[in-house]
Image (cartoon, rainbow, N blue to C red; front, side, top):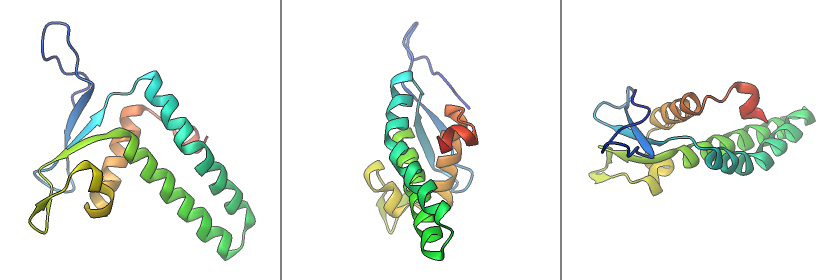
Length: 130
C-alpha cells in the first residue's frame, strides 16, 4: 500500500491507489486523510449515526430496518468521502466513474473500498459510531 507518493522532490500526492482484491484489474484511488477531511467526514455521518442509534434503540422490526438503512447511508457517506476515483471498472461495456460507483459497482467492491478507507483513515469501530 502506498501512503504518500512523490511525484517531484517535495511534492506529495493527495491520493493513493490500491489494487482491488475483489475485482482483479480495478484500482481504487483513495484520498489521503487530512484534518479538514476528517472534520468533513464527521459532519457528514454525525446525523446519520444519531438516526441509526435512535432507531436501533426502538427494538421493533421497523426500528431495526430503519437502523440498518441508516447504517448503509453512513457507509455510503464514508465511501463518497474517501474514494477519489476508480480505474479499470467496466460494467455492461461502460466504464464506471466515481459519480456512479455506488450505483453500479459490485457490492463486494464497494465493501472493499469501505474497508480500505476505514483502514487508511485509522478509524476504530467506536470512532466510526461517533
